[in-house]
Image (tube, rainbow over all chains, first blue to last red; front, side, top):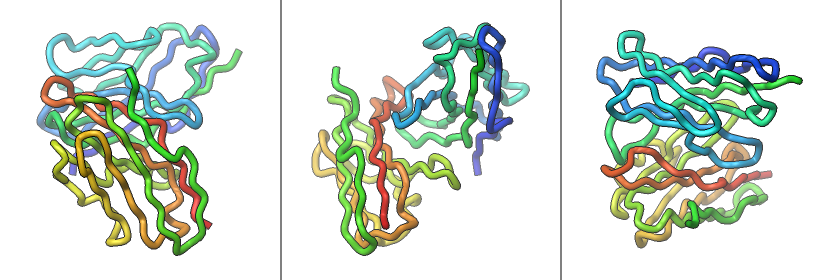
Length: 113
Length: 114
């Protein structure tokens, strides 16, 4: 079965520091890749997506992610963390438009001043 | 534009009672998904519809769960009878394939079964 692995259930950074959240998928077929963010007691909001084309994709709030086929990875980064980035982040994949997303377990990002 | 609308936002019920969760997808979207989020299992698909037709219901836990989509603008998820282990946050999401691959999520319904 296809799966998504997010390394580190909890990541802590200082304000202004680099944010790196890791995501790997298990598939020989490149999937469509997504990062979602969830703030407390809210739904999931799309941060960015990769479907085809440029492997470095930019999203909202200064986040970006790079699709590396050889590493089956789609890590999320942000050069400088802000207190408002504290939330839970989910990596997800799908293999066909209109089908369900397969989610990782999520990574909680904490940002300290 | 209105996003995905879910109601109620919170539901507290006693074991054995019937629970109905409601979802209105984004206008024009033709795919609708029901997910459940728990601490133990994370986010998992329950069922999804394309053009109002159920495509994959393999994630529905058991016969106590049922879902319908009578038209393009409304879906329900029913649990009868409810059990404490059904306590979770239930999300509805919609999308518009093949134009868009991403799914847009509603705010969720937090269900507590006592």
